[in-house]
Length: 136
Image (cartoon, rainbow, N blue to C red; front, side):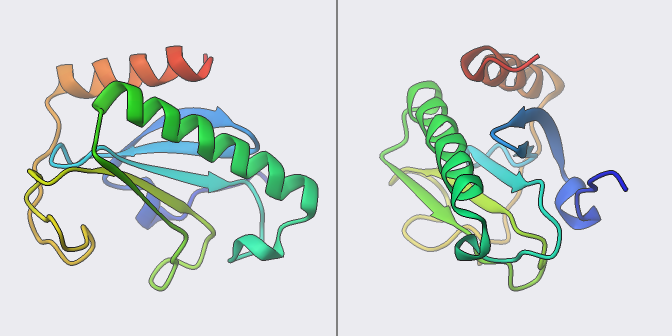
């Protein structure tokens, strides 16, 4: 059976590609550079449950995504979370934060605001991410 992204994760974002045994998405909210890394594993919800080799692969992918966000968006801080309280499929949220963003200093999850990317904005980010990460 082919790996499937939970519908709630898949909706409201753009798939960038595969990196380090994970799928990478850009959340469609231009207020924050918000990426979701989804390890292609079944029945595992938390990072410590991964096999050691998988764990290293996922962490290296996370690091590359962080490097892209830091260089492309230049946020003051990166927030990384593998929470999964509402969607149990393992996923890691990587979000660039700055003092000027509308949810600062609170969490993005508690912030109701949303602003979709324009088609041009999303295409530019997807192309830059794919180029930086070496994805097709």
